[in-house]
Image (cartoon, rainbow, N blue to C red; front, side, top):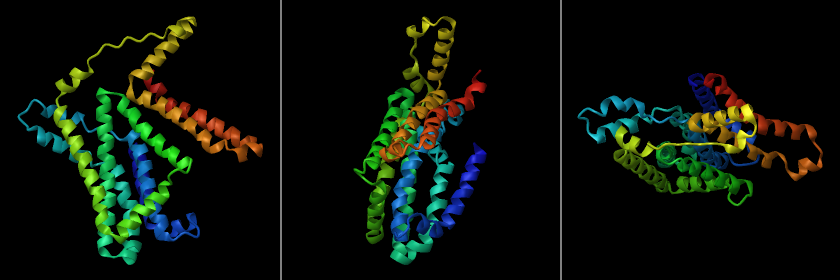
Length: 303
């Protein structure tokens, strides 16, 4: 995982420095500032999706201090600061800051540059602590993870059915910040609010005993419909129980279901009418095979 993070950091540096070259080629005939503004919120939407799957909770390192006379506030502060040391929080800086200094400074001036930077850092922190809050709440209630996926699905549906264009919304928001920079503090307020919400939850649920008391429940699951298949059914039921009892395996299955939504991108009327069998076959293999790929990464280690 560390190698991939370093690889993507290197890519982020290259993309950030070369954005003045890439954007006119990707968004042909569109003003470069407009295209840059349009991708900011789009990036953070993808960032939210990636964090939901990959960002880890900084919890285990505090356990040795819980029995010492260390104030809760200091432990919570340590956790919040530790959560900042993530590649996810570094990527936006590498991606967006070079373009801001090269182009936004000439277009809107120094104060607007400062507010662009504050806005991007605020959204980064908002995503960071929102994901941590969702994941911590999902420890006591798994439905909070489902809420995260529902948020993603809603925005994806808005974009797909062209009810709301995230790119247009992003351009509108950041163009407004360029013209009236003080509006950027709206993102700062949102980041402070989610930071406070996350800290309050930690304060109320910090100790192992408090978290453990809510988690202690006996789960007895029997998949009766598999029993009629004999030994094969028993093994399938056992495998299903092992998948659903662990967060990583459960996430891999859920992610596989979400990849099925790619069918809405591939199987459109134009493609179906053209009888492009190869493309449709590729889409089918991709949609069904990616869950096997994700699950297969861990399968041998689980045996």
